[in-house]
Amino acid sequence: MTDTRAFYLARAAQSDREADETSLANVRDRHLQAAEVWRRMAERLLYREKMRVPTQSEQEPSA
Image (cartoon, rainbow, N blue to C red):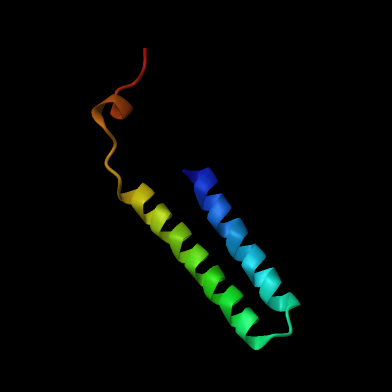
């Protein structure tokens, strides 16, 4: 799942860059909103990973 989180954060960074590159206020706002949504998705994924209870097979050491 960390790959997915990294993808979300990369998309947020890309949206931030695109916001910086545009001169149109409405386009900049759209990119900044998208960046915020990508960051929230990454935060939610991290929260779910931390709160997830490992299954029994994940808890047992493999022999």
